[in-house]
Length: 191
Image (tube, rainbow, N blue to C red; front, side):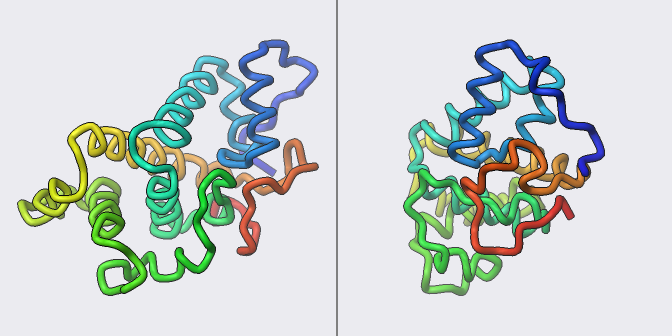
C-alpha cells in the first residue's frame, strides 16, 4: 500500500476534485492513485491537474511528443508505477517506445522527437548537456513557445515521477475498477 494513505472518498465533496478523480478513472494518465494522494491537499490536486491539462493534454506541442518525453522520463527514473502508464489520448504505438533509452542511435525517431528527448535528458539528468549543439537542434525543430511548454512539462513530470516513486503506489489500489491508461508492461509499484 501507499506510504501516504488514500483519502476516504466519502470525505470528498469538492466538485473539482471529484472531476479530477473521475478523469483519472476514465483516462488513467495521471492514474487515480497519484491523484488521490494529491487530494489530501486540494490546492495541490487542483494546481497539478490544471498544469497537467494545460501542458500535457492541451497546449501548443503535440500530445504524442509530450507522451514520448513522459515515458522517457519513466524509463530513466525507473519508476515501475509510472512506466506502466500510457496516455489513451496519444496515438503512439507501443513499439515506438522500444528504443527510447537509445533514442540518438535509433532510426525510429524523427529529428524533432530526438531533439525533444535530448532536451528531456538535459532537463532531467544533466543541465551540462544544454550545449550550443542542443540548442541549434531545438531551434531548428521548435518555436520558443513550444520550448517553454515542453520544458515546463518535462520538469513537472520529472519531479512528480520522482516523488511518486517514493510513495510506493500500486495500480488499482484506489478506484481499482479501472485499468485505463495501463500498458501491457508489468503493472508495478513506484520502484
